[in-house]
Image: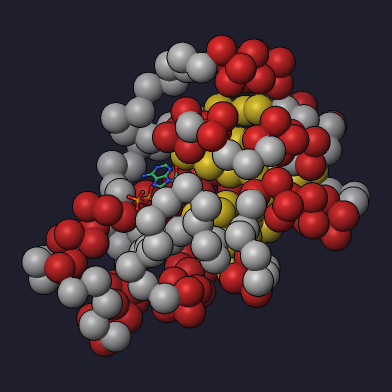
Length: 209
Ligand code: ATP
């Protein structure tokens, strides 16, 4: 079966994650897509909401697709959540499944700065979702080589092989970022691009003020 892991800070999780991941499940016939908040993001400033709040919001997002599930593995680790370690763990845990690691185009464009990034494809396929404002335009030579070595345009290949490929998805462009959302929440704006249940949770716990 096709098992996907979608990792992120999810600070907070928003429609940019939920709508694209839902479309991806349909595009690739994914059985389970684990939404996995990261514990100590290695390349970023510390998140605005605590790990437990971020996980609770991810759990609320799970009602939006039957294949979504919340995955707290990285939050339970007492070391930085390097994706290579996580994928190695999931590869051992589910040896019979095709494993997909899902990311947005901005993440692919900075992949060469991730810890042990060239090993990610040893454990999983990389599936990249387009994102508004981010072109598929690679300047780093090592990343360029990596992409041309692993790129496939044939989605069926992801099922026939358990790891090692890179696929650019045809998911819709959803113009939302958590950074912009946090600013709008701070200004107490309404009608934000995230589910009502998550908006209510943020207000109830007075997050991002
Ligand atoms: P921030 O604005 O704080 O950087 P973010 O909106 O990018 O946050 P993250 O939790 O950092 O959200 O993203 C997790 C993953 O989801 C990353 O791989 C990112 O590229 C991807 N992603 C986030 N928003 C979108 C979107 N609108 N469309 C496609 N992919 C997205």
